Amino acid sequence: MAGVFEVEVDGVEHDHGLEHHNEPNQFDVSKLSPEEKWRVEHARMHAKHKGHEAMHAEMVLILIVTLVVAQLVLVQWKQRHPKSYNLVTLFQMWVVPLYFTTKLHWWRFLTTWFIFSVITAYISYRATRKPLACTTPRLVYKWFLLLYKISYATGIAGYTVVMFTLFGINLIFRIKPEDAMDFGVSLLFYGLYYGVLGRDFAEMCADFMASTVGYYSASGMPTKHLSDNICAVCGQPILVDVSEEGIIENTYRLSCNHVFHEFCIRGWCIVGKKQMCPYCKEKVDLKRMFSNPWERPHVMYGQLLDWLRYLVAWQPVIIGFVQGINYILGLE
Image (cartoon, rainbow, N blue to C red; front, side, top):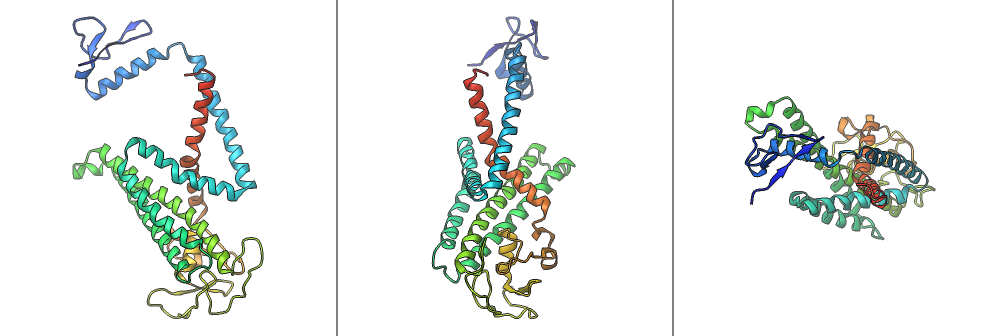
């Protein structure tokens, strides 16, 4: 049955360019275009919230104060207890999108999330076993390095599609702007989300594996002495000389003269976010070691990841807390 609504704002009849039917101020919503329906809903919203300016100002004040206090609390938590902060943030990054996408029935995201979760859970399980299998470090770093590259490529593709849509290039291929923009934003979100999540899981696995191998300790001296032909990341022999070209991978020598497998040191520095030698903790010059600019975890990208991590993990919690305060105070 078609719905019929009457709209009145500020005591004045509003038809918003719509034709009247049998009775004044009434019209059949089912016969309206999407734009006209939006205008009707807009007018109804104004009529509903008329005279609530003081209450709205109070709600905005509560939101601002809550955001400021929450930011201060999170910063202090991160500085004083970084391990617990990173663990809770990682858990929320992993779970919060699952709740909203399940509620909205976004099956494509749920499928990719399930595949990522199964593989990453297996990799993380392998990384936390003691004793550590000799093939585990390379398996872990290969997986997260692959995920890292895929997320970058997906993010760049999404950004490119968004830019092309803004410049109207999508019209050449007869693609609607809203469809092209949705596709580009989706790719951008997938790339950034799985990039952040993968790097956080990789950092956790890197700490477990490095401490298990024994050549690295986060706060103390290594428990093993490193030989010249042993990789401090995986603990396996180095078979290719630094000056030779490897068939599968090369060997890298850092400025501190310690040598590592290519996949191991790339995973350690790029994916595991450790910008220091795994053995002596000397700072690694990533610009000299890697020529590809996408492989440099520079400050700007780190700030972007922190912002996205805060947006996905903590913003829904803060907004939910604000809504709870408004509910208790009887604000709508």
